[in-house]
Length: 186
Image (cartoon, rainbow, N blue to C red; front, side):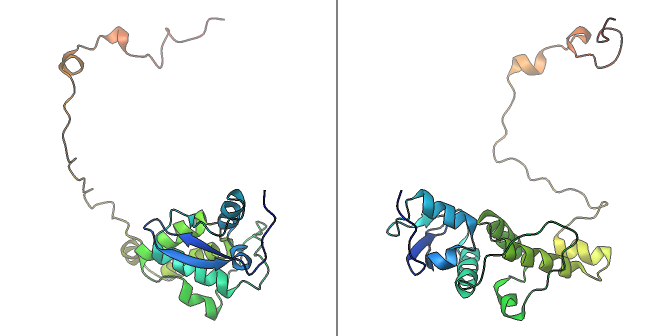
């Protein structure tokens, strides 16, 4: 296995649709997944590190990691409630629209950038703060209990074989959940 590279060594990270971004090894420390993938490739900076993340989210995360490259790695503490404050300089990295925000949260979780994941989660919480239930349903895309569920028809209808459809079900073939047959003998 190769030695750990210098912090200034640049790696390429490739999104799921082929877009590549440069990130230094020093900045990569904020993403446990990127760091682990670089290590598993023997720290080969000539081949891109491919990740299953959309390009918008990946660009935001790489830019954030680069901005905070000189800072210590965030340590996630699980004790008690957390009071997360999103610094003014980091607000621009977090998307404001629901679809983009959802993809960003999935990407931050996949790349294990805990600080960004906390910031994005705080953003979701702030979106619902002080809203009525109906407003929250609209913001988060939750349907009302009275709304009919819209189910799309399958692209291709597959019919069951005749022997399955036409086979009679005999009462003795059904599993018995309660009653004397399934009781254990003492």
